Length: 270
Image 1: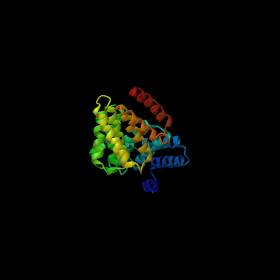
Image 2: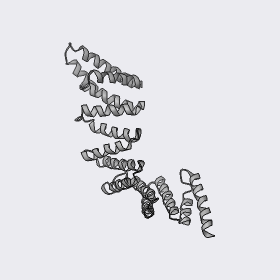
Image 3: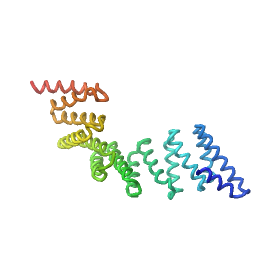
Image 4: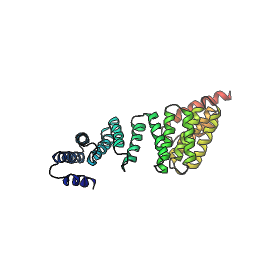
């Protein structure tokens, strides 16, 4: 539908629009190449249209198509990021602007691992208050996760707590709890009291998802067992590791942990 509208714009412009006809032809060629999965050639044609008609409807559509193609099919994350940013500069009022903002966050966080820039971006999106409850909960999750990956554990913990408080109905709630437990576990290295908080979150999560998410349940039990080990409760840790030995994705990891615990238990009983 959009393509037909764009073509119609050029048709009614008059017979003196040779340049516009050329631009239209390049756009049609880009779409043909894209349909044939010749993505590099398609992007080259889209780029030509963007250069020749930067602020026109067809130019903005080409900019969007180039950005998405680079992100999804060519692995050109940095170029796609620049395209999306340019699209927002030229079409901030477009219906596609919110999606462009989401794509920018995705590239910064998942593709380029620029966590501080991703955090700053998601905080700006939260301030806009233009996104759905589920989308906002994802922004908060990624801010928290970003801080964790930047080794700013306390900030990570605070943002996970905020996410669980403000978005208690989010589908990300179990994942937030699981990662929150890991932040408390990481903080336990310098603050032994944090292990008790990690333990409680792991236990509460395991109880709440026991019958609904077996994979996360097993990982939560692994986290609980690891925390008991840090608290020198070796028998409790061993029993929990043993209970998930056949279900954990990496059985050898559990086997090694159990072997180490059996040695620690033996020494403790001497």
